[in-house]
Image (cartoon, rainbow, N blue to C red; front, side, top):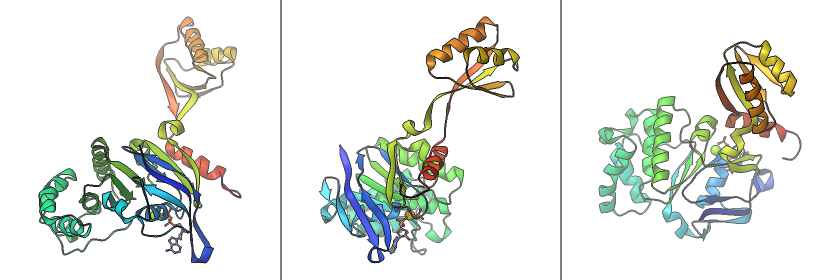
Amino acid sequence: MTIIETHGLTKHYSRGKIRALEDLSISVEAGRIFSLLGPNGAGKTTLIKLLLGIVFPTRGSATVLGRDISDPRAHSRLGYLAENHRFPEFLTARQTLYYYGKMSGVAPQTLKKRIPGLLALVNLSKWEQVKIRKFSKGMLQRVGIAQALCNDPELLFLDEPTDGIDPVGRREIRDILQRLRDQGKTIFLNSHLLSEVERISDEVAILKNGRLIRQGRVEEFISIKEQYQVQVAESGTQVAEICRELNIPMIPQNGNVLISVGDEEQLNRFIDRLRQEGVLIRAITPRKISLEDFFIDVIEETAEGSP
Ligand SMILES: Nc1ncnc2c1ncn2[C@@H]1O[C@H](COP(=O)(O)OP(=O)(O)OP(=O)(O)O)[C@@H](O)[C@H]1O
Ligand SMILES: [Mg+2]
């Protein structure tokens, strides 16, 4: 089921001088973690704000949960954690969830029942009576995620939820997001942290200067065909000889060889020859590029002129 769909969505600010988003058409399937990537100023926050009805499109249209974004009924089933959010420091974690939950229209009785579960989900049960001013950045982000869940939304928008957080805190947030996805929620994430995105996202879209330059499943971007790391026991001349014979480019790397083969058949021919010559193979690993490498490549590819 498609949960978000945009058609030619465009947002200009300052009477057209700033083109934050241009002609964006994307769709997001329910039950996924969808990540929006892009350099600073690419239009990521603008897209979330448009989908939430916080700002209005200059042109184009979009639906969220099957309703047009101009229809306020769509918003009752959404959760939102804003970029650089600030909670009142004099509130405790529990009070914060209570007040934010009330602001999203949840009945007080429902909230009282729901809050302990939300605090447990984000590992803050022991901190429920502690004031926000004592919270670390990671804890604040976790309160923020719990706050976004107060109305039990189907779709969650999180704008940079792991920004400025240490690796342990990031892992905690990653685990929470995976748990939410397993419960059937859809998560729309804006992030700069590509290694995080790579680990948890099902699908990514890359924006640059307000335009979509790529959309697809993470595996499509990071699995690189044709390169295998082959680890062999001996250092080399025999292997180099076999590579020459089979016309396979190779890069020696301290006892390992990185080879580029056209396909798996060629890889197997290579293995057969290594074994014939009695070369001991320790490991063969397909080499992947990271999402970060991919991201930098596509951003640079589109560096000149229009994307
Ligand atoms: N209210 C506004 N008025 C004028 N220009 C704006 C406004 N909001 C955003 N912009 C501009 O629109 C462009 C896109 O901004 P946006 O905040 O959507 O980018 P972003 O991808 O979220 O960036 P970041 O990674 O830094 O959060 C930027 O050039 C920004 O300066
Ligand atoms: Mg932003």
